[in-house]
Image 1 (cartoon, rainbow over the protein chains, first blue to last red):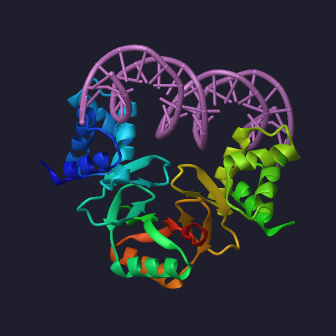
Image 2: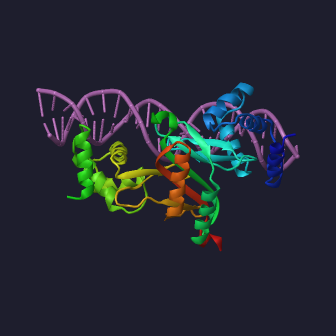
Image 3: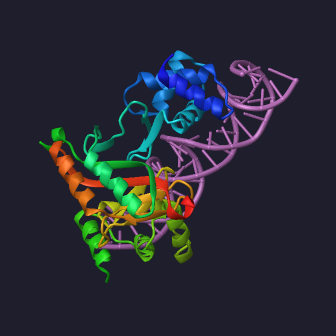
Length: 142
Length: 142
DNA sequence: ATTATTGCAAAAAATTTGCAAAAGC
DNA sequence: GCTTTTGCAAATTTTTTGCAATAAT
């Protein structure tokens, strides 16, 4: 059994929730994709595995996955919620191209440190963050 | 006449658009409020000034204000679009409390510098960014 | 006069919810 | 058996759009 499934199982147990086949299908489809996914894209793929699974279950399951720390939500400027892996995947931020809308993941430890420092100085206990830099990517700059 | 109105006027002229009373009402209501506003809050206030103005006009006007640089959009984790001033207001980021949902504006020049540096190193031309740190605020920490 | 802007209502898009039926423990 | 989970469809919420009427230049 995958580590991720164990994490989910533990979370469910601790919160008086039950395991279910459909929730596991959503989990596995989510884990099998390395990209950022919208609820809709996830639903499409889940449908192919098990057509009996509805949209609401995908939304409800992703909420659980976020709560137990396996997934996290990010919103780009299009207003749609994207889900990305959050376990054994280093936290990262994004550079989003204003022209072609592609993005790359980035991480800068110096920025991470300063973010923590700054929040703490403001008497704020940081738990997570999103940082998105919009601009023009290499390809579109030519 | 306010500087902001001149900026809008210039933008409209350069883009073959016309001035209009209703657009000006939305602009003035937006300028009169110092906080972050949702389209809905804006609509409520605009309605009181001029009940003949519809929701669509508020949305369309805010789009124009963003395009001409007077406003900017930010999305917190609630998925709703907030509009904030972008002219003669220093750029800033946000600390959002996960418990009470209040936020404070912050700015850290060292982070700003590093963001620029990092993007450039990735062959990316940065144009704008959003950085939101979620956590627990001073009040909710007790 | 010509063309942009608007209100309105309807459409779209994304997500949530109520509820009876099915599934897990 | 009791309680959680689910599908479905309907409801909500936020934003966009089509169009005929109106306003700006």
